[in-house]
Amino acid sequence: MSDIPLSALFGALFILILLSAFFSGSETALMTLNRYRLRHLVDKGHPAATRADKLLKRPDRLIGLILLGNNFANILASSLATIIALRLGDESAIAIAAGLLTFVILIFAEVTPKTLAALRPERLAFPAAIIYTPLLKICYPLVWVVNVIANRILKIAGVVPDETNNNRLNPEELRAVVLETGAMIPQRHKKMLLSILDLEQSTVEDIMIPRNEIDGINLDDPLDEVIQQLQNAHYTRLPVYEGSIDNTIGIIHVRHAMRALIDGTLSKKVIKNICLTPYFIPHGAPLNQQLLNFQRTKNRSGLVVDEYGDLLGLVTLEDLLEEIVGEFTTDPADNLPDIQPQEDGSFLIDGSANIKELVRNMKWELPTNGPKTLNGLIIEYLEHIPETGTSLLLAGYPLDILQIKGNAVKTVRFYPQYRKRKPVESS
Image (spheres, rainbow, N blue to C red):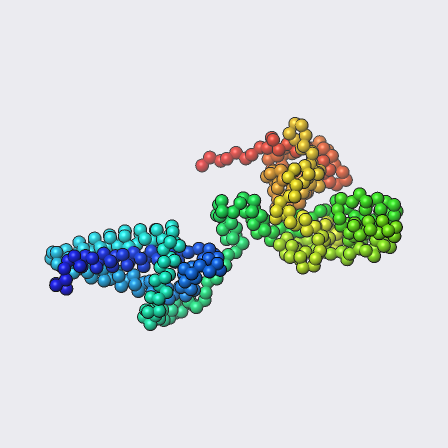
C-alpha cells in the first residue's frame, strides 16, 4: 500500500463514496416506488418498470444485494481512510479521518441520495434496476447464503419471509388515495369515486321512496280510473296491487299497458297477465350489494320489506345511481318537490322530506345517522308529537311547525339563513 500514490487512494475513496451513495439512494428509490403506478407501467410494457417489478417480488434478495454492496463500499472506504490518515500523519490522525469520513458518508452517501430518491423514486429506481438485474445473478450464491441465515433468524422471531405482501387497500385507505390525487382527477369524478366507496355504508332504506309516496295501480278501482292513472303516470314502471299496497301482485310497464289500450284489449285481467313478478329487497341491504343484485336479476326497481315482510317503500336503479353520480337535474326545486322557497329566504318543507336529500341538495348540516325524514328528526328531538305553532332550534336551524296531520308533522317553515352555530371554545 505504501507504493500506491495518495492521489490514487483519494480517487478510490471518492469512487467508494459514490458507490455507497448509489446503493443507499437506489434502495430508498426502489422501496418507495408507487406499487400501483409500477403495475400500470408493467401492464403497458415499460421495460425498466418490468425489471424493477421482478426485483421487488423478492425484496429479501434485493435488500441482501444492496446491503452487501453498501457495506462493502463503506467498510473499504473506512480502510482506505485509515491508510490515508497513517500516510499523512500519526495514529492520532485516524480519529480525525474517521470523523471526517462519517460526516462525508452521512451527508453525501446517505441523507442527500436518500432524500433525492424519496422525492424522485422513478428517476433512480429504473436505472438502478438495469444494474441490479445482472448483478443479482453474479452475486446470487453470496446473496443466497445471506438470505438463508437472515430468513432463519426471522422464522425464529415468528416472521415468515415467503408470505408476500399484496399491498391491498381497505376502503378507508382507498378513500385516502382518492383524496390525495389532487388535480390529477377532476373533482366531479373524485366525488363519484368517493360515492362508490360510501355505498357500503348506506342501505336501501336510506334512499327508498316511502310507502305512503309510492304511485301504484289499485285494481280495486274502476277500470276508467286505472286507465287514467296509467295515462298520467310519471314513471315507466308501477306496482300493481289489490286493495292495499301490502298486497302487491306485480310490476307493470306502462308502455305494455298502453299497447293493450291502443289495441282495445286492456282490462284488469290483461293488466294482471302483463305484470312482472315483484322483486323484494330486505331493508338492510347495502347499496353496493343491491347495485350488483339489480345487475344480476335484470331488475330496475324493487319493493323494500322489513323482517316481517311488511312493505316499507320502493327503490329504483335510478335512485341508486344518483347516489354515485348525483342528481340528474341541477335545480334543487326539481330534485326536491317537497321544498318550496319563500321570498323572505325561508323554505316550506313537507315533513316527509328525506334528510339526506336535504343535506345533499341544499347543503344544510343536518344529522343523517338517525331518522330518515324531517318529521322523524323533529319527533326524535322533541320526544313527543308537537302542536301546530311550535318553534324549535334543530341542529342550529330555527323552524316553525305549520301543520300537523294525524300523528306526523306535515309542513315546516325552515329558516337556514338564521342558523345559530355553537361558539368556538377558546383554548
